[in-house]
Length: 613
Image: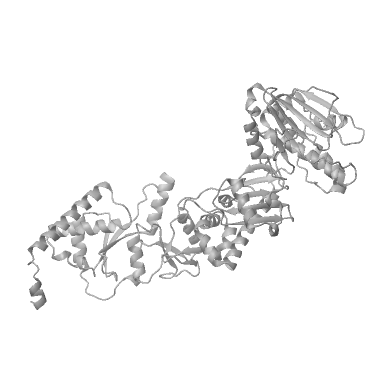
């Protein structure tokens, strides 16, 4: 066996970098501006250790768009480069000047020194949109000469003495004919807002000499401050500016971790605008104040993506394009830590300000329930502070919520459709939970899986013993038989019970298990095809209308039974078109019968009434 070295030819590598290194072309501006930030950071570090002379120039990056000249220029007043350094850092693909600087000065400035660059490829992203790129640079070293470098993105370049008179570097990109969008000031401003909004040094766009101008970025974002130094107004203002959401957030978590990894950020709990759907949030990921991406699930647990916020973590193991994360054990640790900080904050609010926690519940419960379903560990941490809102508007924990028939919790999924059942429950002093959000069906199944003895049953799935009378004559068989003949529906089971709610003639019940299977068939289609809930109607033997059924003529019994049946159906679902038409026709007929019966009675006589006759 013999050894050899793999050869990489730059004429083959550069086209790959230009076309495939970055998923979006606009990232090139982030890379060039980030290089400028690194150059300024390096100069500051050298001043700090006494290897460079400080001057009066304020750190800044200037960007100039010249549509007529078809140039986009990025200028910094950082460390600058000598001709030797240009040859070393620019002309060697994948040789990182940032990493070289860190290694050289790590004993004096620390292991990373806040430097952004890592791979030595960012500069070449400029060729994604440019035919030609020029560099004019002057090193901060005493006696250094200015350098001019130019290349068309091929394997050759030209280098020589330049004309720059102040320290720093200028990158001039001659924009290609088919990339003219990057000569529009509005487009450049949009890119800067997206990628460079919080880069650590002021960035100016098309600044005119002698004219005061505001930077396009905020170099000191709120997440860099200590939580104790931030006010409520600052948190809310930062939220509205970042997300253009002028509804103030409910509350927030300020992350500020130095060990075992560097992590800062702010997570906001937004007010939910849609009470029936899970509204996705937006969490922006940064590394050293450089925007990476939104909602990276490797760092941010999936259920936390219902929140809004920013996370800045310089320790993230990014790939060469700084667009995605490498698979790394540290990422999972960061993710778990964020999840734990969220649960800690929720416990703090629950313990210290329970009224606020109750008030927030309707907005935060979808995210908490989603988190429980997606992460067993999160469920274990928040299990004791999970709330159920009852039909009286009170908020109770799982342990405090009243159970029936052992460990069964009745619940309501639609307050309007199930209003009859709610009325019956309240009348008998019973309770039920309001679980009306789209995620609740998944949530209760998960809780049943985790809490083996606990079961949930919808309020229309069963009649509990507490709602029944145990005394009275039982002529249910005759009434059941008459009812079956009248409705002619073999798919439904007819039962008779003595209910305490005497004004209710009948209630419709749907078996909990088969109804859940039907709900799953709606969601997942063929996997549960054919699922149909087992329905039954319970006639109330203590209701006067039901008691009268056996004495009615066959025609009148059919009319009354069918009407009772539709009334029971209305208590848990809307009637179909034909059913509603029949219901209205029967209602009119019944009212006509009442009117006719009234006419047959003797007219009212006030004198007789007064004499008691």
